[in-house]
Length: 294
Ligand code: GLU
Image (tube, rainbow, N blue to C red; front, side, top):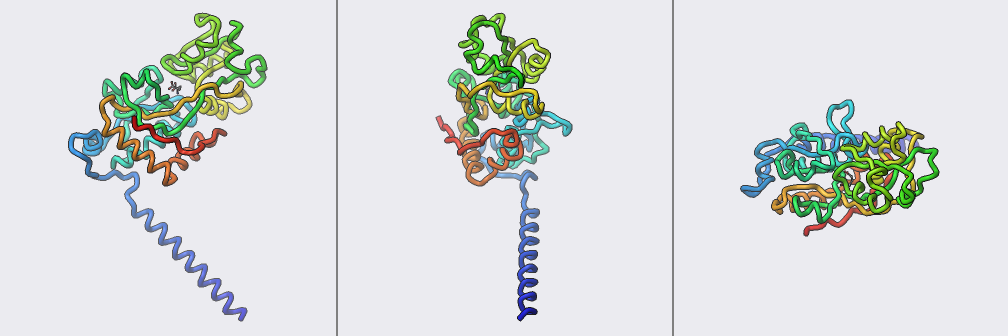
């Protein structure tokens, strides 16, 4: 009796091991990330990129959790991971991505001037931008917030800028830079603009400004990277749905990206991308957004 139970357990263990080994073999046999000749309709951006086996990806290089160029020499973050899902569906190997830095102000121009085939860069979908380029997505919804030094109790939200005494930094060409103008008393003396958010962080550090304003998840990245130094001051006060920028008339590519996003929302790739990146910094991914096929 005793012997047969041990034997049964051993058999079960062997079975489990066997299955595990099979699973391993199966996955290593796949062609994920290796690129492949897929067939796309003639004349489409998908066909052009697949044939070229190369893609120019516009993203940020200075934003922890979304697109941050570190020791690897390649930007890393949620935007980059979302882009890699699309690149994989295009049948292009990951190492054929050419990363192009697209600070907030240059994103539309980068798309129009062919410097980037697509832009995935904490890029809020809005009507103004939709006049010049098109958006797939959204694939995430952020909201504008304010970062201050940990010890600061004088700034509690955007209304704290109304008395004209506090300085706030943001980035040229960003939606938060426009939005905060509704709250400051004097734009010229209170609003400082740079081309990237890391310069704003340096400015708050050095005391040239009191706060930085942009999307909560970008600020959470800086907070996480500088433990104990900064905090958010109050609640989100806008909605920033993140889209993927493509050429204005390129409906086929936009539809392809939207289809890919919907698949990735369902099959776990989107969640996995978040968990490995910005998800580590305390923000929630939430339910999958509804893509807007306008
Ligand atoms: N999501 C906002 C925007 O697209 C702010 C973040 C950024 O500047 O990238 O303008």
